[in-house]
Length: 385
Image 1 (cartoon, rainbow, N blue to C red):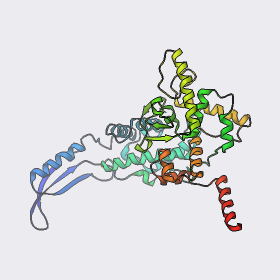
Image 2 (image 1 turned 30 degrees about the horizontal axis):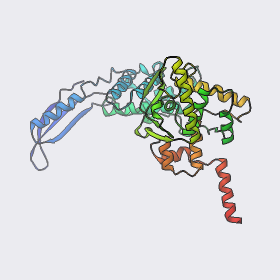
Image 3 (image 1 turned 180 degrees about the horizontal axis):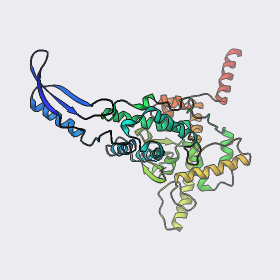
Image 4 (image 1 turned 90 degrees about the vertical axis):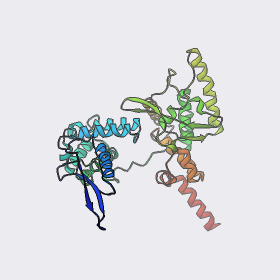
């Protein structure tokens, strides 16, 4: 790939002498990639701009020899180094890169075609899961979005002539739409939290999930310094990505927030602080995390999900609840209660750490049977007096 470039002069439309540069940053499989800039007043200005552009392309390799796997890996590293994505996001991308090698890692970037991506997506949907089962349509669409962004940057860098993912056929948005959430009603939530077989260290954790709508990683990352009377502040998230536990700030600034809690939950947390403190003192350990597991260690986020699954499944077996509910749906339960209580969407979005009220409305603004019945009764009261 020639990247020496050249500077030359020309006459503009007014017959005035101007300078330009011509830089070759190709070829690729369709045509040469050239960058031409015109309109410089002096040769020095044109040369300075040429040097800057050449430096920007210095680490770009010949697309005829660059594999998609190598490009994708370098692309993740570069975005992480430039601060475009967080280390945890980069780790998640690398975990998804594990889905690629058998199909695309050895494919030359310049020879990648939409049909290659179609075959890859079909493999993921049928046998591409960890246990030989197919991946969900939602996961495959996520993989497609990452590949599309990476190839978009390859087009911008001049490595390929077009973004092949634009012509690929990932699962439709409709097929990737999550199933309707199976959320417990208020009586079921109370019965679950009152089950005498749930140990206290887990009961207070589940109660906080219902009472704050916090994500699993936010719950696992709470320090006692984040509790201030009747409010909990989210300052960090503790997550498992690719088998590695990472602790850092939430994904966005909106994730940094303070969530008010009711008096009963505040009392439960104060009681747990005393109990946990006594246990830690006996073990010659100091308090830090609000929630600890059975051996007083910080929670592995995957461990939280595992124990929730056990407790929620037992609750179904014992008839405390009508159906199984995921831990993340306690967040949905919390949001639903806020909306049902007439809380304005701006406040709901703030409490959940959403990017905007519009997102909150799209995710949680649907009707449910309880609110639908209340609405019907309200209309009837007006109609019939």
